[in-house]
Image (cartoon, rainbow, N blue to C red; front, side, top):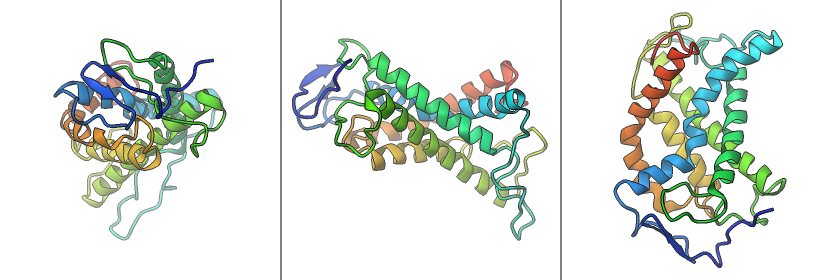
Length: 241
């Protein structure tokens, strides 16, 4: 069993990123290493939408249970759905489960040690058994961190859908209405906020990552479009956006 790198004794340099006794990263991150580190640490949140697509398609196929919209089909006074058929409970469960498992992978891939090249660091660096989310050892903790990042993604995604419905952008059957910024920025912002607010004493929630997060937000619409194109290509989405 590997030991989590502690806040007290960690002091080394990695790919231009300095991890010190006092968790401070801001002065040593390069233009590219910062956003790449953020993308790696928040990969569970960024891919939660893909997990939601898989959950929305596979859970009904495996269980025979029809998808249940989160809004229950209800409309507001403007005559439009609250969220629409695209936001389902099985998709939400798939996103949370998938994000939790993916964070276990990034924890494993980080090897709990600092590599000399790259930014594939363990998101649990600086986590400790006394933290509120430390449940079930390191692997249970990794799942919990990932699950909350996935939940943050889904909250932002639902917020984007809510705004689109208020703007009169309807979901037509299985085809989502296209709104690039509302389809990307809300889920990324809520994912980052979840990490910063809930895990401030770990690497994934370090406040020095805020600058690189803003940089990654600029690239998020491109990343989101590429994942949706892939989902369309493999038959998980009806449209490539």
